[in-house]
Structure formats: C-alpha cells, structure tokens
Image 1 (cartoon, rainbow over the protein chains, first blue to last red):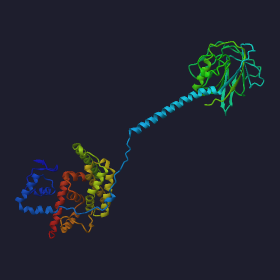
Image 2: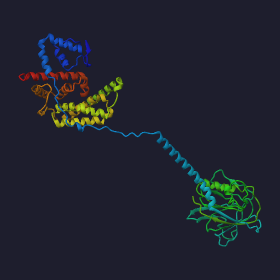
Image 3: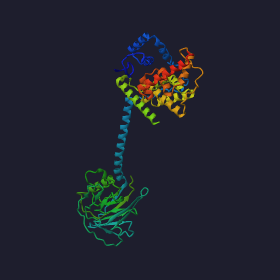
Image 4: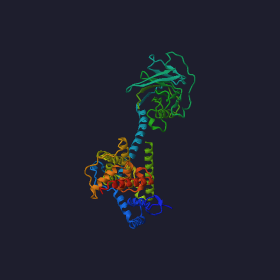
Length: 322
Length: 192
C-alpha cells in the first residue's frame, strides 16, 4: 500500500523495514527524510539487527560535512541602501501654487480683454477726422470726391452704388504712412469720365450683415461730399460699398455726410461721429473688433437725416496697427 | 541543449508556482526582496554558495565568478523574487551557471585541483580527503545533489526545484551516489 513519506511527498510502501529494503530506509534516515515515527522504527530495527549497524555506519560516513570555506569577496557583492529623497507635499505649498496659478490665469484674461479694448481705443486715437462744413454749396443729389490721386482735382461724380470696387493691396509701412492701392471704377476713371450713378441710396437704411465681416454703408442724404485725401494713396470706400473684411484686408475710408453727432449712446465714438464724418478704418483679416467698430459707426447715423449743404471734408489717415 | 532549456523552464515554472502557493498561504510572508534582504543573502549564503561552486568546479576562480554572477542576477531580479525564496533562487542560478560552465569548457572530468588546506568541523581530515576523492568519482549530477543535500541541507523537494529533477529522480540519484561513496570507502578500507 502506497503512502506518502513523512516529510517529503515521496510515495513509498508502508513502513515495513526488513533486510531487503533496510538500505533505502537507512539512506532516508540519514537524509532526514523520515518523520519522527519512521525514524524511531529505523532505530528500533537497527537495535534488533546489530549486524546491520556496520552497514549503517558506512552509509553514515558518506555524509559530507561542510568545511569552513569562506568567500572572501563579499564586499564586492554588497549594495548600499537606495536612499530616496522624499519631498513632502505640504498643503501650504500646494495652496500657494494654486494661488499663483489662478493669479496668472486672471492676469492673462485681463490682459486679453485689455487688448481688445485697446483696439477699440486705437480706433479713436488713430482716426482723426476733420470736417469742414461748406454751407454755401447747395444741396445736390450727387456726391463728388476730390482726391489727390487726381491731379486735376476735378470733381468726379461718384456712383451711389459702386458696382466694381476692389481693394487689391494693403501695405502699411512705417508710422503715419498708409499706402493702399485702390481700384475704383469711379476713382480710377480719368477726369472727365462719364459714369453716372446707377442707383440712388437716399434714405436706404443701414444694412449690416449677420456676419461681422460684412458691413454695408448706406448714405442718408443726397448731399455732396468732397473728399480731400491728404495721402497720395488711400482707399476710399463709397457709401453703399459692401466690404468683405475677410477677403479684402485694407485701409478703407468710409464716407458719410450726415451725422450730426447728437446720437445717444456709443459715447466712445462721439468724437468722430460729427457731421459729415469720414471714418478711416483699417480692415484686417477677420478682425471682429474692426468690423464691430465699423458697424457702430454706421448704426449711429440712423434717424438723423438732414439735408445739408455739400460738405467738404478733409481726412487725415494714420496708421492703424495692432 | 534543448532538453536542458526545457528543464530550466520547468524549474522556473515549478519555482514560480511554489512561490505563489506559499505566498497565498502565508500572506504575511508575501513580500519581495529589498536591498536589505539582498545584503542578508550575501551575508548568509555567499559562503555556502561559494563552497558549493568550489566543490562542484574545483576551481577557485571559476567558483568566484559563478558566485558573483549569481548574486548579480539576484540583484537584477530582486524586485521579482520572494524574499523567502531568495536562497533557493540563488542556488538555482548558480547550479545552472555551473552546468553551463562545465559543458562549455567540457569539464566533464573532475579535476583534482582542490585547495591544499580545507578545514573541517569533524576533525577527521583523513576521512575528509578520502571523501573528497570519492566525491570526485561521482558524476556531475550526483555530486551536485550530494553537495546540496549535505552542505546546504536541502530536502529532496527543494533539490528537485533547484536542479529541475523530480523527487523520485533526486531520491534515486542520491541513493546511488551514497552507495558509490560507500563502495569507495569500503574499497579503501584500509583507510578506515
């Protein structure tokens, strides 16, 4: 009958030691692979069979005894304890870091907002409009533009509705030097060119497209406006022009002649919302701040439609940089 | 060669399974080696390992190299080894390194290059020398098993884990080695 050895998992027959298998039990005894009961049985067997004690002694002599052999290079094997520096996370430090982070975030937000307000502020600062009313001129139903581009300073009738006006280039070089090339069907026409208005925008309400990039100017009166652009190259955008700021980044001059400056609200625009104001707008690609400014300028003119004399305006254009 | 690799894999699996079994039963002892444990291994087992390697290879330098490489491997894998199994792991590494070295150098013959002075506890230097010679007549496996059993006191099961043999093979091999040693002692009975 098989069973497991006391200490190890060896399976062997029942402890039935005899002369035939005593050698195996002797070796198991010497190897300490027997439990206490089995060890006692082996010892009793040896006591009963004294002639086998010599055999047991010989097997016992085969047991190796370890000598005092020392490995003399232990120092090479030792490793020092890895001391890791522990940086405690104090609550005060965490709180200070959070405060600094929040302060920085608020500062950045305020900085961004101030930049936006600066842009609107610059609109006022860089745009300077001087108007001169010429009440002597009778009120006419035409608008005339006198520009330095035209050396003859001949009054050219401007279409109330300009069919093809393209602002082709924008180049702002240096301070107080705005250069814009304008191709205007009305302005580029030679002196004497006979182009008559194809439509009349008198009384047409201001139109502002939902898209901020599109602004429509509409004249409010039939007065004549004489524009004297002091710069050799400037963009003149006639009333009723449809400007697409996203497509035509340019320096544009919006003509208006019928603002009395008595509008309520929009106080920041009051200085340029004078009679016969001319707005000088620098348009940039998809700049909402500019377009919103442009909208404000146009919205203020509603309800103040007066028939005034032809007004002679002088426009000073400054660089609008941002 | 392939058979040897298979045995190693088997040993590793058995050791791994055994470790897991022990750690599941004894949760308190389920911890991996630390630097302190490693240094304790050096302190407690370096001498025994060196002795085992010296008796197996009979070359002091080879034994030193094997001990150092074994501890180096133990250090590298210390974070994966159960602290309680560090000694078994260490001797397993050393045993297989010794087998590889012997096969590499074709040192199948036991070399009679024992150190001149080997102290013994028993006070029987003459018997000790005879046994050393008798040990040299054993084959590599028998010699390793005898050394693991007598010097380190491993059980059959532990020896089986280290060497990659099963318990029956360990038992049979050890018994045959004992009988050969006994016959050697009887043949030189005049010594006794």
